[in-house]
Image (cartoon, rainbow, N blue to C red; front, side, top):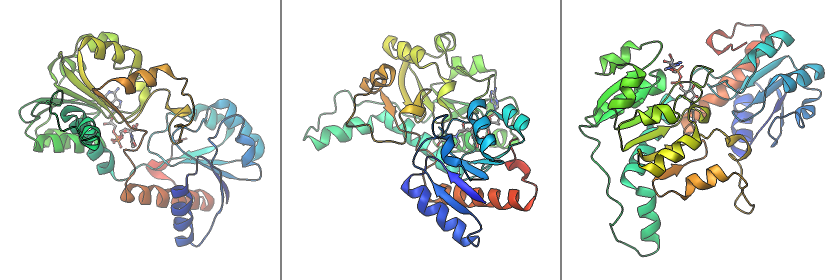
Length: 332
Ligand code: NAD
């Protein structure tokens, strides 16, 4: 199938082309650096399929344009599909698939890395030593051993994160609408979300972004956290009301914040804006805090994860083209 690959960075082009070659070059891939939005949808003209990424806009307006161009299949190079209007896709007869499964270790390990970096101020320390400053003042953290870590969303990534934290000697609490026996087997204990907020020294978010989870971290829930808690978000930016998090950082209610995702990331992430004036005052405020770490949605970015994402994307195209069932990769 002729497939428009949006938000295609150099690594996407190399690795997706390699996966396509390995599968017999079944598809004609049209690589587009552009993010998919109402203005760039036209670039899929002549394509039957679109391969998108997390910050591509697959709302109703874009899907309608794609449908009018003859696009019948959309596959996202991600597990999350909150950027896709699945109802509109169904109405338009566009089949939507995702990568149901890829190295959950990539994200779980990165979340642990963010936690260590923000607690032990590793990035700050590194910046200091580059300038010949070996002072320790301001770099004190706390032992994770013996602390309580709350995991919201104990699926594939959350359960692995919990397993690593249990290995650090932490007490692990969980909140999930579908309890995972694996989480309980490693010693995790399910509590209500309010209880988790109140008892945790560290909270890490691993649930999907849905209408039920949007802004689950907000002014009210932050007021119910243990004072001095650290919040880690590697899931989706929309889980956190960023303005409320900034207020909690200012008051000290949050001791630290480490985020790989940001609610307004679509216009910022995956591009070099270092020579431009960034007009998003919220992200600029966030990165100015000494106790905040922001990374640009890179938790998935390991050789293993990317390899699996590209292979599954080609498998999705193959299966749709051959009329084979997509199983748990089918979104709409
Ligand atoms: P998963 O489906 O295995 O687990 C998600 C868990 O969240 C499930 O156990 C589910 O029951 C739970 N959940 C759903 N609604 C909930 C709610 N209202 N409250 C509490 N829990 C709820 O998914 P996963 O593979 O572990 O991925 C988790 C999330 O990580 C994805 O949704 C995605 O947003 C994010 N992610 C981020 C990156 C990155 O690079 N930063 C990469 C991959 C995934």
